[in-house]
Amino acid sequence: MLVAALGSGCGETARAFGTTPAARVRGADLFFAGLANRFTMVERSPRSARARRALIRAALVPSRVYDDTSVWSARAATTRTLLVAGRPLDRSYYLWDDVAAPRPTAPGESWHYMTLTRLGDGLFRWNTGVDFSVGNVGAESVADIFGHMVRGAERRDERQVRADYRSAFPRTTAAFALLASLDTIQLTPLPDGSTSERLVIRVDPSRMRGRYPNLARYLAKYVTSGRAHLVLRDRGGVEWMSIDARDEHIRIAMRSRDGRLAPRTGPIRTLPDSMVLEADMTMKVKLFTVGFSRLVTDLAIEQRAGYRAWTVHARREPEWHLPLITERLLRTPLRRPFMGEGAMLRVGVREERGTTVLVRSSELVVEESSILRFLNSLAGNVLDDFDPRTEREQHAYLRELFQAMQTDIRAMTD
Image (cartoon, rainbow, N blue to C red; front, side, top):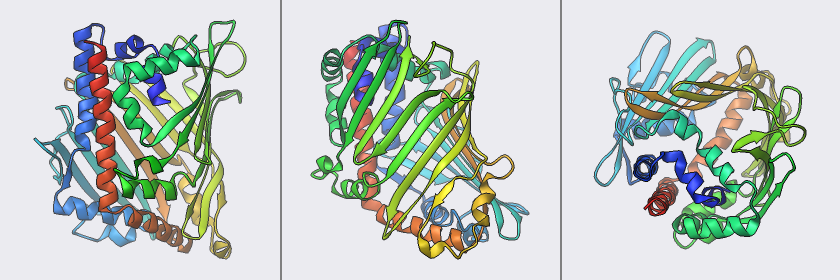
């Protein structure tokens, strides 16, 4: 989908990065070069490397790291804090712990924080955040990239779309093809000027086995064998978009007009700023299949000058799919993250001190228990399989993909 969307109406896509050819080259350089640099020979200071692995392993059992002085860069009465800064160097990307690290300003700089607060006996709250600078592209421009890509595909047919992305984005197409192929593109023009879009992507990590063998094995084991289903609805229950991933295929269905998402049925309306996102997800870990269904979350869309954000709050417990051996374990702790304001995830982009920053933050309350220790042990198996060799290959592949996008857009706007 990414390659097709980028390549469809290539001039429309390029306009997301500026109003003139020179501005487009500069914007694309800043944006994609920053992302590519983030995955170039990543190196970590000893504390940040040790802390990262320890914190991931303790996600559902925070007491294991709460009093570990080797993990935290700052400690208060009930709160522990880790602050890590990132900076591109000549031939690598360096991450180091620094409690006084400033927020990022130069393209490619990043700022990562994690706080752990003890709320009571066995009760903890995680707060995390990441800021990543992409230069002064502009928050509105970054937020509108999706709209420009979608607009370029509207009122066109499959043959035109495929011809466009193959000619306009040859390097990106080749890099994307190592992981997936676009099997189906169905673009149906409707009488009201909108377009109904259906895309099917086939995910096949075996194609990257020759260059990225460890990453290929990991993706085949955990990604292609999993299942996920996402549906975006408005408060009236009308569907606006769906994504279904299973059996090595990702199916995307939506409708748009003038680059703006529209309800899949009925009259064209502006996307509300309050939506409902429903999710089902399962994956196999060792001998167990774990996951959830009917996770109903609230999605808030914020738009103001120099700021765009999409915030998900999960306030309703889903239906859990857990192994039979957990049936006798107390399930109450599984409800705890959804109480009160619930679990939160926010992604967005803001303008700050002359730079444009991609932002991500989250909040999760954990009540330790036997069932969470079991789930934490399964997560540990997934982490063990994502060993340093696999991580290096993941970084190398993402760098290749982002560099290809940067080069193709530069060529497009020459």
